[in-house]
Amino acid sequence: MQDFNIQDSIKGIWDKLGGWLDSLILNLPNFLLAVIVFILFVIIAKYVGRIFERITRSHIKQDSIRLMTVKVIKAIVILIGFFIALGLLNLDKVLTSVLAGAGVVGLAIGLALQGTLNNTFSGLILSFLPELQIGDWVETNGYAGTVTEINLRNIVIKQSDNNYVVIPNSKIVEEPFKNFSRTSRSRVFVNCGVGYESDLEMVRDLTLEVIKEKFPQRGNEEVEFLYSGFGDSSINFVVRFWIDATKNRDLLGGQHEAIIAIKKAYDAKGVNIPFPIRTLDFGKNNLTLNKAD
Image (cartoon, rainbow, N blue to C red; front, side):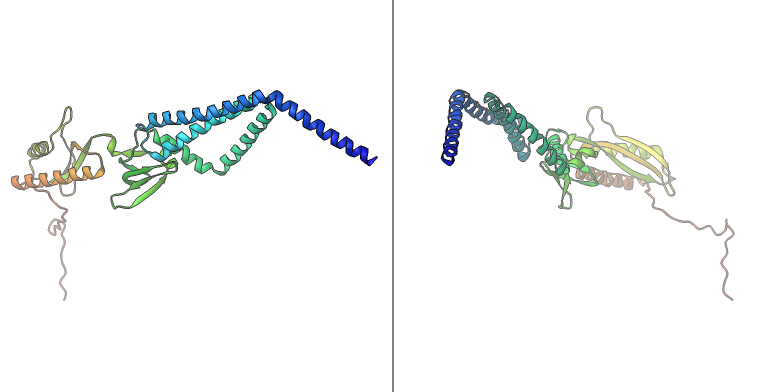
């Protein structure tokens, strides 16, 4: 009885192996075709990555972002080839299981890395955003400086005090930022005041002459002079003019030069720039000082 069971088991094993062999022989053409298709897609992914890298080289200055994008595209092409190969092998159930498993794993990874993925996608957006490039001077999230690096997680800003600030990409995308380097010309504002005894029309003409000579305007640009109010010790005004500026230091330099030029011109013409003073009128207000007995 035991010998009979052993013989039946061996016969079953041989029958199973024979069935697998027959199935392998029958599916050998599909298997070879699937292997060829997969290898072909691997080669295609390689060339697609090279083409995309050449196309984006002039648009994406950040090497890390460009290389990561190329890797993602190559991975997508290879995955397409993998799924086509499974389809050629008639492994529909395996394909369905792989897709379902990929969905579950992708959901779990997405939930675990929600903040990181947010910064990564924000980094991809910034890499194609012409309003923000390496070397630009920007103000954002309470910081100002030159952009030295943009990667898939953050941007790095070098401030004027030579310190570096690392800001997550999502903060840049969600918050407004000011880029001084996107325009070659900027308007400078200089506030000042002159004494109440001054000839206001003469002050206006003198200031306009000095600024126009110091900072030549272009095209439709013009120097603007406007009195802004009566101050405690002076009649205040603002003068506005255009200069070449791609960073905050250029604006400060323009204000610096304008202040020096205005002060020299006012000194030459005897125009007073008053400082705050306090006058005590004892007679008008009947104020008296009591002497000690």
